[in-house]
Image (cartoon, rainbow, N blue to C red; front, side):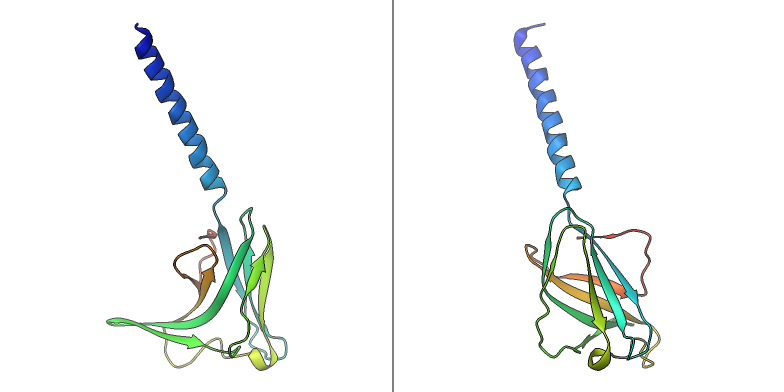
Length: 149
């Protein structure tokens, strides 16, 4: 075998291994979050939405907003829920941490509107470093897997 062929095979194998390592590092360091809820329905106790940062790096949420979304025949009806009236909605989530959004007292609102049947609650997040908004369903939701961001 000529030396040029051996060198070519060695370089191709080395670049493939290094590319695989780089891909694995990106997959391992991806940002992940899990969103859960606890609805009591009592204004004095309050309701809670919990955001879990499952990644190994900190995450900054610049702004968040709750939305009611109803599926219609030809589209969706989106109604924002404004219970905080332009208060600061900025949060820092450290690596592997949990942050709770509590809705009690003056911030309590009706979690199950009787207006329509197929209403879902969503949270809209603006995360630092992302170009697009992240919109995730809060209620009802399937908890089989964490939400990837």
